[in-house]
Length: 495
Ligand SMILES: Cc1cc2nc3c(=O)[nH]c(=O)nc-3n(C[C@H](O)[C@H](O)[C@H](O)COP(=O)(O)OP(=O)(O)OC[C@H]3O[C@@H](n4cnc5c(N)ncnc54)[C@H](O)[C@@H]3O)c2cc1C
Image 1 (tube, rainbow, N blue to C red):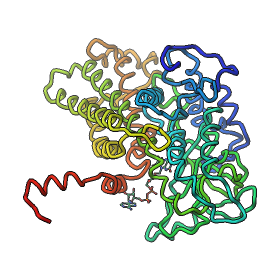
Image 2 (cartoon, helix red, strand yellow):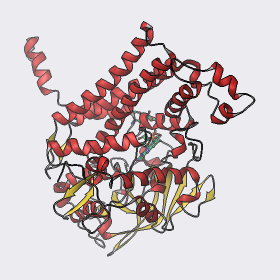
Image 3 (cartoon, rainbow, N blue to C red):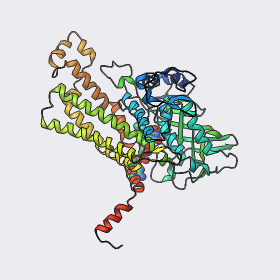
Image 4 (cartoon, rainbow, N blue to C red):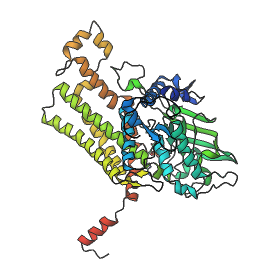
């Protein structure tokens, strides 16, 4: 079933949601504030609504033959077609097919959504890959004894069967970082325990896409001697009473003419501070409640999310190469050796990221539950490589655009009878009209120079752990034994 193009209809043979069904699932009484204003629902803010529309189009694409392979698969256990987002790849082929889904969502958003609908499922896949570790774990509270392993297994099946979307947040709000305990006031922590579940308070930040998702998967990063009441891991619907979503300012241009803002007119994934004010987490939705052996597994569970991030960056780097090539064509600058060198560097960036991805997959092994596990050291090194070079590459792409990236006038100016003819006469490029040239520059502006692009650039730098922590991770996880032994042999060292 995993290959041929197919057209699907919503039916009992499929667990797929349509775009309309996804949108309807968000109108559930969730509490969202933007700029201090309480929204009636997520559609009450144009930038959020446009972002939802873009994600809804991804749900609809599942039913089109040209996207069906990348976005859906057949689940033998359910006996149904399901979204590929929730597929746990068990063979190298399934892993490559799962990557096609990441490439699809990255292309759909020009890489600007770091948390498209298929991101959070990678967290659930990561948690499920550690199922054996959850099996022996025990609640620290006698009053509530969830079966963590059963809950994890049930959650991934629930996600798959219902094509749910989720935010995932490990990070706590930014406050005093001078000593770990200073975070205490904001850590999620258990306030009340009962047989049927727990009540938690605290906050999560940055909950990207939380206002536009069905659920939130949460845990704390905490510190080594974090008390049991803050060693909590679970997932709840985003409309659970007590959850308040406080959004950052909006940065995109919803409703703008697609000529003026081809990317930003499609809205954004916004980031929210997610306040938990006495939120009930049912026993069945708890993955950890105070067990120290599960504490610190979140890093391992995020491997597939990091693979997602790097794959999305690979797609983005392909967009940079394509855009840079087009710039040289419309400006007629491709014959300058300096421009060729700049384009060469952008290509080098793309080829290197692709190499990291292919190497991570070639070196993949299987987690104890059989899920294919890309090589974490290749993923981490690849992410560090992209973080280091990203600003330079963006700068180079902007550089070869010259003034065109700033001197953009908009569709109305081109159509204005008093000034439009000047623009049409003065601005044509090589073999293209002034408007055609500007359409390309508008795309690159949205991608690299706009406020929205600024948020995306910050996201690329620090999402899923900032570079210093990634380097520490590489230090911890890269086995140097063989390399050390080789140097000892070569240098005749006898210690
Ligand atoms: C746009 C955006 C979206 C995000 N989305 C999500 C999300 O969906 N889910 C989620 O969980 N998180 C998300 N994050 C949060 C992200 O994971 C954190 O920003 C990141 O882990 C850094 O943590 P911090 O911002 O709290 O940095 P802080 O702890 O406030 O530290 C500030 C800086 O100090 C340095 N620093 C801090 N600690 C150390 C250390 N131990 N060693 C060396 N240097 C250090 C780093 O340079 C760091 O960037 C998002 C962030 C951004 C910007």
